[in-house]
Length: 248
Image 1 (tube, helix red, strand yellow):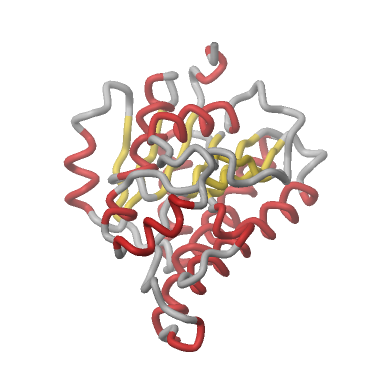
Image 2 (cartoon, rainbow, N blue to C red):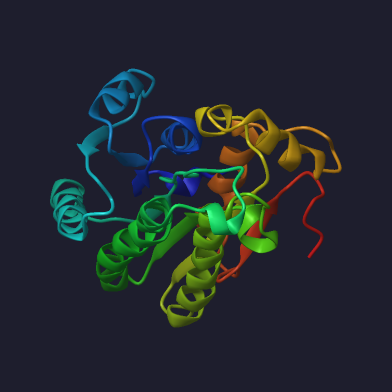
């Protein structure tokens, strides 16, 4: 269906595992040349064998704006253009805590990764997209950013900020051929979720009318559409992937 992806170039953050890897694999299958970004070089190296298309690996800490800019410039230099950006890198931080128990340093770390990291990549990719009057940016948010999950102040607040940024950027670039959207999954079975306290995962899953977690394949398939050329009239929007939890 998405034959127009051929000859496109994409960047995926958090591409070494989980949702980022699943989205990257789906894009690669569609013919996209990819720059895979992750803080963990060993994860990137392990993931590389799963790709049949052209990929370049970049180990980078997305909370370091200078490093992010340098990598994006390298990607542009190598591939000649950047058509797609998927911001999938993220952390939950400490969970199952009341707000007053939240550790300030941990909250700042979650904010730096989840919000500032997505801001940095978008900031330095957008000038290249503006040059070609085309681009697709997808920020991975969360249902927690819409509704707030008890016990997850840092994560919920950071993902709410990502949704707010998506709304602004969608309007900022609405007349440029660039769309900026977000995806707000409920619980998707990933290593990130598996590392959370069982009580926290149960709390989140119990709120889903379908009474199950989403799958990586379901999330990657939706992401594929969101960053496709066919998705040309939706911007500044947060797509739900919540098993019926979000009804607005």
